[in-house]
Image (cartoon, rainbow, N blue to C red; front, side, top):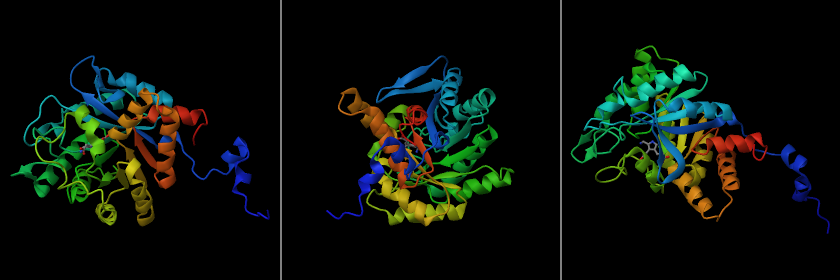
Length: 327
Ligand code: PBG
């Protein structure tokens, strides 16, 4: 055999494999999504997301401390309000659940980096991501409310805002509103490439935010499309988005790669609730090796081009990185 190319030469030992690794990961890239709720002394497990909880504000600091100790650099807050109405007023209430969570978090753990999800669906009685006009979401009327929501988050201490509603023009509306109030330096991470996905099922249970009629297909993207994802990403960069997110991560790795190639901003990938639930369920049955699967999913997202990885498995990934099992 006259084989000059023998790829196996570089796979001969752990030291060598680590030396030639193409993808390097770091704990500072991990962002942990968290649900905050009203009430006291509550840490409610989410039935379809074993190991994930909704925290009342008095319980929040314990979890933040754990995350900080594990070396997870940032968290993303989702609010679960007590009160919902037609116009989602809890989203932009200065005393709303996320706004209060931010104040608690910034006071107790100012070292962590706080991002907020900006959307209406957890706060509207109909569960859609904006205000309705008949049976559809009114895009332009919703923009004002999203901008108001983002501003109230920043005023309560958010380091970054992340609109996830998929209305057209929301990044521009939020940027203008923040700038007008003097918050020029607060970045916007846009959920630009967000698909209408069944992978959000467990989240909607966690946040009690499933639409009461219809679906989200008139604003979230059709999973068959990739060029449309680039259109969304480029439009949002044009409007001032500082970071572009692709969501979900697992079934949309091609989009992580394409957005990285097509833009010059950092790319975030969100491994969503359904991805977590699938792994947990299979692991609970003993059908897969949970830690290796979680490591592989994260590696795939980073290899595809993500710089930021949002995952309910952030703490486990931090541990795997510490142990040198990935990264
Ligand atoms: C709010 C929002 C959703 C998710 C993040 N922000 C739900 C949705 O769009 O239906 C899903 C996150 C997850 O599934 O983990 N619009």
